[in-house]
Image (cartoon, rainbow, N blue to C red):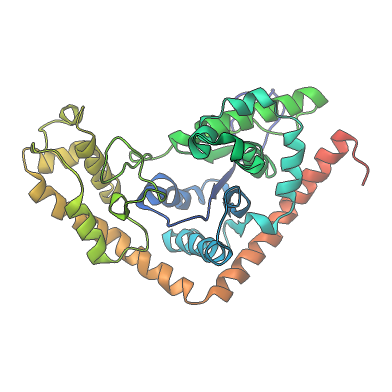
Length: 344
C-alpha cells in the first residue's frame, strides 16, 4: 500500500474508508449519486466504515421520532444500494461513545481561527450566528473524530465537504506534531463519479438539498415512480435544444445538471448522452431521463421499503455494527489517552 500524502516514511496505515451521512430530512438523488452508490465498490478494495452520524444531526433541533426513523431510513438506503453489513461496518454514531470522547480531545487540538474559516457554519447558521448551537460551530472537530477514530486513510467527499476534510488533516498533523507520535494518518479525499454535485431541479446554480422548501427541487429516494417522472417533467430548463457538444452545455446550468444526472444514472459519459440527444428538445430528453431514473431508483425504493418494514431487524444490524466498531475504536482512544497522559 502506498503511504498517505503527508505521512512520514516508515509509518503505514491500512487502507480504510470512513463515510458518514447525517440522518435529518429525506435522502435525495444527490446523496445517492454523490455518495451512497460509490460506497459499494469501495467494499472490495478497503475496510469500509459507514455511519449514520446522528450526533451531527442534533446540532440543530430534530423531532425525536423523525430522527429515529431517519436513522433507520439511511441505514436501509445503504443496504438497498448494496452495502453489506457483514463486509463493512454499518452503525449509528451515538452507539459508539468514543466518537464524542475523541471529539472533545480534538476540540482542544483545533484552533478557533480554523473553525472561524469554516464556510458551512456560516451558511447553516445564517445571519443569526450568535443563536447557533456550539455543536454546530464545533461540528468539524467531531467530523474529524469520526474519521480519525478509525485511522481512516480515505473519505469519499463532495465538494462542499472538502474544507472539513482539510481541517481533519490539520488536526491530525497538529496532534502528531505536538505529541511527537504518528498516531493518525493524513486522510485523503476520494471524489468519485461525474455527478458528485447534483443541482436543484428548479435552479441549476444551487445544490440539490433536502432542506429546500420546494419538494419539486429534488428527487427523494422515497419518491414513487410516478413522482419521479413528474418531477423530471417539471424540471426547469431553457428553451434551446440540447447542444451538439459537451462544451455547448457551458452557461446552461439546468441543461448541464440534467445531462450529468442522466450520465450518472445510466453509467455512461456525458459525451455519450450528447451523442444520443444532441439537437433534440427537452420534450424528448426529459421522458428518457425519467425512464432511466425510474429504472434505477424504483428497485432501490422497493428494497428500502422492505427493509423499513422490520425496524427491529435494522436496529439489530446497527447494534452489531456498533459492537464491531467499538472493537476498532476503543484501542485507538486508549492510544490517544496514553499519549495525552490521561490516567484511566
